Structure formats: C-alpha cells, structure tokens
Image (cartoon, rainbow, N blue to C red; front, side):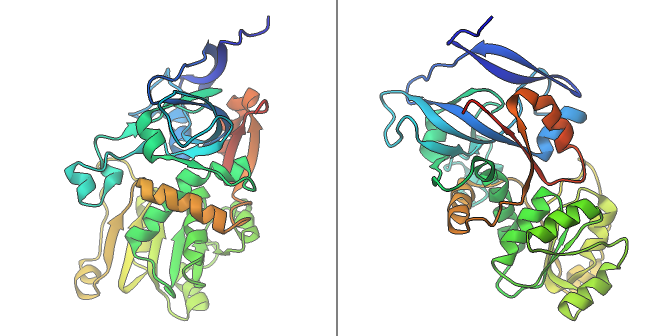
Length: 347
C-alpha cells in the first residue's frame, strides 16, 4: 500500500544494536519555523556509540543523526531570508549567546542551547532559533556528502583553536579516524608540518589519499617518526583523537616545551590520566580539551569548505541509501573506513 502524502519515513533506534524504519506524520512548521526535506545525514561516533553501547542522551526509542544537509521544503510566513528549495546545512544546536558561559566565550558548553531533532527522517522541523543562528546556505558545487561534514569540521576547528595551532607549528594528530582526518586537514592549512599516527592500514591508505603524512606507531616509535618528520622527537601541538587513556598519556609525553596537547577524543567519565608534573611546570606543556563547537565555528566550517573545494572529498568513504540505514550503522562501526553518510535517494 502506498504511503499517504502526509506520512514520512523515519529510522528509529528501537533497542541497542537495532534500528527500524517506520512511518510518522509529516511535521508542519509552526510560527517562525521551517521544514527541511533531508538529503543526506552523516553518522558520527556518538551515533555509533548510542547504537552499539548506549548513550545517556540518546536512549531508545529515539531518532539519531545530526550531521544533516537538506532543502527548505516549507516555511512559516514569519520566516525571512530563506526560500523553499534552498539547500542548507543546519547546526544541530545553537548556543543562547547571552548566558554567563556564552559571555565567557565557551558557547559550546551553554546549558540553554536550541536543538534540532534526530535527522534520520525524511522531513525535519527547524526552530526559529536554529533558523536565525544555525542555518547556512550551501554552495551549489558542494556535494551533499561533503556538506554533511560541516558539523564535524566545526568541532575540528574548535579543537584547532583550543590547541592554539599556529602557522609553522609541528603538529602530531594521534588517531586517523574521521575526526583525526579533519583535524589534520585543517591543521595542514596552517602548517606544512603535520603527521598523523594511525595503526589501521586501511585507514592509513584513506589518509594518504587525502595527502596526509601517516605513520603506524606499532611499526615505528612515534618519537622516531617525529624525528624523521620534524628533526626533533616532539611536536608543538599534539591533537589526540583517540579515546584511550594509555595512548593519551603517551601522546602528551611527546609535546614540546611550551607546546599544547589537546584531548579531543572522549574518555569515560571518571577516567584519570597520569601526567608528568615536571613537563607541565618546568617545560610549560599545556593540556586542554575541546568539546563540540560554537555557531561561529559552524559558520567558519561552511565558508572553509566553499573556499577549499575538493579538500574533503575523500573523507566520506561509505554512502548508504536511506532504505538500508541499518547497514549504514554497521558500516560506520567498522575500523577500516572514515565517514559513513546516509543518502536519501528521493531527494
């Protein structure tokens, strides 16, 4: 039986390790809102974690996905500046901009954010707040797959900023997954001295196709690899994109005097790191973390993608149709690829 025109398909996480497709009413924009016809959604580590092991913020039944590109399908009469048919990317959240945390310049930690719903559905409502602060047009030459990278790229830009990467810095990225790849690509626009540490041979090949220098630390000690690449066994900025305590501790130890190590990969709550107090005090090694993005990072990410056409084309290594969304989650959990995108064929 064909679907009603008032019904849409959604992909719902019904229990750990299982997603199902069902129908739901097509949402209608309220005052100041718009409706997005979804074209593609990227799967991130948070989606995979919620699918495989559970996540405190995304408990079944729920709709996952937040790296979204789509076309404006309907707008409330009060909406200005966006027309039906325009292709846009949407920040999954937007900080309020006025609370004490936002005024301190760390809007990624705002407790009053506006959010979008899970994006793995054919139509998505964009609130007035998201429309006003977190919705950006996409250049016509940019593919849907690349456009889904706006949000993870914004997170990478926040990390680069927090780490203080400067022109000419020697940069070591530990972990060559999708986020490590984006960190390295952005760092490379600031400095030619970028090295990625990755143990998986298949991922290493993807990274090399992106033009990145890669070393396997299980074959070559990182201090030796750094000496070959930078003529010194340390890096000014060490960007740790792996959620492993031992790896993080070892990587921090490779930070040069006056340099900074960034904890980008998340560790479980309560995890403790053992740090060299001598390095922190006498060598002024800094350790910082980064989480998420601010809307300005998201805006900068969209502009960066438009200014660097083709730079991210190899980051998406799997494209799966919406009808096979369950396979996409299995694909995204594999260690050999980088980014998996779900595409909506009918878009």
